[in-house]
Length: 428
Image 1 (cartoon, rainbow, N blue to C red):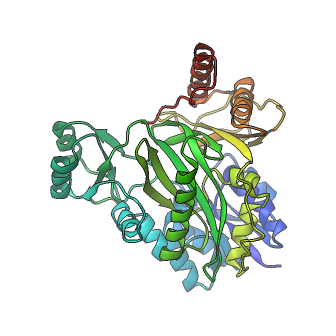
Image 2: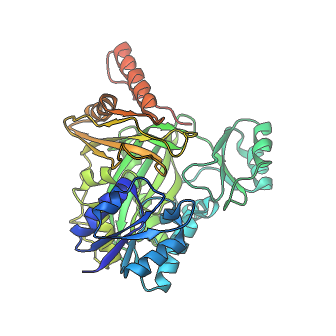
Image 3: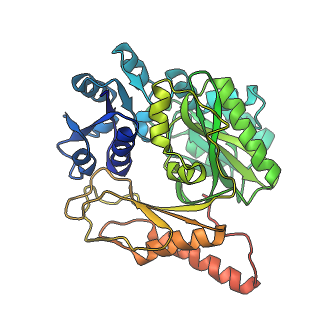
């Protein structure tokens, strides 16, 4: 039986272990001796240790070395920073090992905001007014005005993103270092009161594309998507269809392989390209509800040369699903310790969580994901938020209060209007 190295940790890695077995592979986990939470390793057929300091799970050299030691034919890169590093597939290829993720060319383009938006514009996908570098951003201010959003050109996960509303704000941000791996700033017009829509596709070795679903973010704090729902309801049906079509254009034009997503920002005047996520996203379980397929097993099959039949791999556009995520709040001491972890049983709700409450929490950025299905949007949202409210996850600061506040505001709005007004959201 071929071996696959699961290059991650936590709930996603534990799930990838199960999916690998379903795909007929023998899963090998990686684990750091300094990681208190090792449920993913206990579930695997074998374990490869990762030595060293920092976060070894994102270290390409250590992961490749572990894959070689394990005799792995394939590596699953998870859904973190490692999965976005073009060095991983390049180094693995030199060792004759496959990677169940995007190739280095797409990762390089997607990881550079200037390259990504230029590629989208070249392929006819709507983009926002944008600029890269101090002089071009200054010209964009005179041409497009405010507000703008400034982002590290090579940043990821929304880190370092700042909305600016004056020339003084622009000067202040441009005077700062955008951070490692991001040599300059990128700017684009900021869309007020926007909604983020993500579209996920699978692409085989021959370039055949199958749609795996789409979703919209109902609640965003900073750069964190706390609550997503599917299908897309808060944009005209024609826009949703066009976003799916433009995702396919990008997939075909940029050579997507495996499972990737494209995000769009949707405002009152239409939708525009936001970014490419050339990896599994945290919303993969939502795609599984929409398609009925194990998305991680699909990734592994595609990496081993399986052909897609888009007529068979279909998604249900009427499948209502919502997912809420308890992210750890920034500034929380690491490691932390949970004083209680009890996830409430609730009809139609499932959780992604492998935490051991008796062990410290060191690497986690997300504690729990709660996913709910229902016959409609309102009930799916109610189930996932109320299930988390009835659960006990304490001792580590997270965004449960933000979800509860959002839901209470929504309920008050509904009573005041005696109907079903648009769901309120906060996008920063």
